[in-house]
Amino acid sequence: MTARETYTNIFIESFGVEAGALNESFVYQCVPSWDSVGHMSMIAALEDAFDIALEVDDIVDFSSFTKGIEILAKYGVTV
Amino acid sequence: MRLADELERHADRVLAFGDDGRSWHYGAALELGEAFRHEGLARRLVLCLCGNDAASLLGYLALLRAGGIPALLSPTLPPDALRELVSAYRPAYLWLPAARRDEFPTTRVVATFEGHVLLADPGAPDLPLHDDLALLLSTSGSTGSPVFVRQSARNVDSNAEAIGAYLGITPDERPITTLPLSYTYGLSIVHSHVRHGCTIALTDRSFFDRGFWEFIRSSGATSLGGVPYHYEMLAKLRFWRMTLPGLRTLTQAGGRMEPSRAREIATECAARGIAYYTMYGQAEATARMAYLPPERAIDKAGSIGGPIPGGVLWLEDDDGQPIDTPEVAGELVYRGDNVTLGYARGHADLARGDDNHGVLRTGDVAQRDADGDYTIVGRRKRFLKLFGHRTNLQDLDDALTREGHEAACGGSDDHLRVYLAGQDADGARAIKDAVVARLRVHPSAVAVVGVDALPRSDAGKVRYGLLDSLDGKVLA
Image (cartoon, rainbow over all chains, first blue to last red; front, top):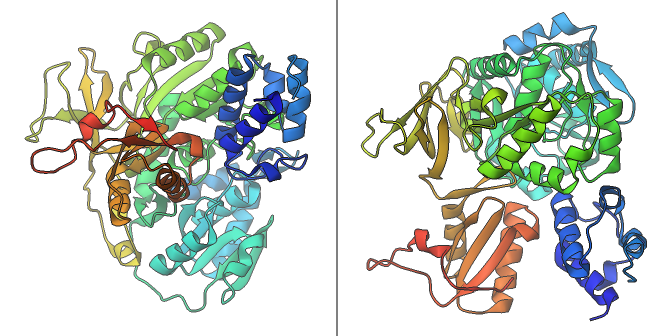
């Protein structure tokens, strides 16, 4: 699986959405399942999948599907 | 209610700071209360959709001032669930965001404030409400269950006073909102602080929103409360590395925390001079019944401590006899002025008086140590807590059975597991979706596990105690 597929699947699993919904307008709290509980489980899944530990600033700045791609790049993960 | 009567003393003080930089005085809530009084809603039922915003907080206090009987609900309650509640309770008024006004086309707008509207239903019957009834709180958060707990003025006043006494609340305390106003714990924080004329730092933002952390600093918040899941989030955010010099008090309630986690928090708090309180309660006791003071938070981590001022706790065995020996488990029973009047399942119950007579059987199994501190060790009834909200597993089982599934529920707090006989992955997915929709929880809190068969006794009853040790495969 490519990093992009892993990243997309984690969003699909964490928020129960279709791949088609995942774009720059998929942002924090845009669906009921992206609440604080969903955020926590998504972050944990990303950390496991890419074997990284996100800094606090990055956890709170992880506010959209697109922003997340930028943030992961800082950890050497190219999505 | 003394709490509402005494708001006048604080008229010139600031009631709330908003995260948009605005602020509201107690006087504004008093004025709104006068407007509501003129509307004639004294001793009438008012369904309120309450978030952590100025309209919700000031509107709620104004309703109390005007002598209305608020029934508090989550602002995210879906339209169909709200309609069902309205038909079960026939409220004379609704206090809700203006955006939801159109859900009730036959009502009239009689007041507006900060984006909320007060709707009057001219067709509502003049139903009898018991003289002692002052407030209704939902037992199950945002699921739209029609069950409310009936609270009296004495319940609210006595609990707010007891909480203020053991937390040592003074007028310069400033709690930040982390819990919904419609949730008994969140409301108890408001009640216990407005009695003292404190300012509430009012925000709907979550810990994962940068704005929350900016606001906690700019508002000068001195305390916050959380259910165990909040403390999981704080750990993830490496909370202990943050510099928050204004923070003096942390409280935890809404479910049992692992002793190791409680000790870790207590230790971190002690090192920073923050007072950490583990607390225990239920909506049936207004909010709080027990607390563990900061001095014992490390040594007694995992314990709920002893009764709040004015309350009495004891344990009873299966025959209802008091247990006097330390370290013997029994059902935790509480007596105090904060034990509520009872439940309501529809408007007819609002005429009922006091069903409980000041004594609450908690359904929790506890033991007491030689110092008199209590520790919860189990539950008599089959329920678990999902993010602080009680979820009855028997109700879920019954619903699954009605829908034709051979399934039974288990798991632990924040992790519900539905055990399903068979390996039907599509069926499991459908069950998960239905359970998530019914409970309105995040999907990650629910797993459907396929097992060969449910463990049953010779009489065919499900042996619930064995469920969580079954070998199974997570299907959804």
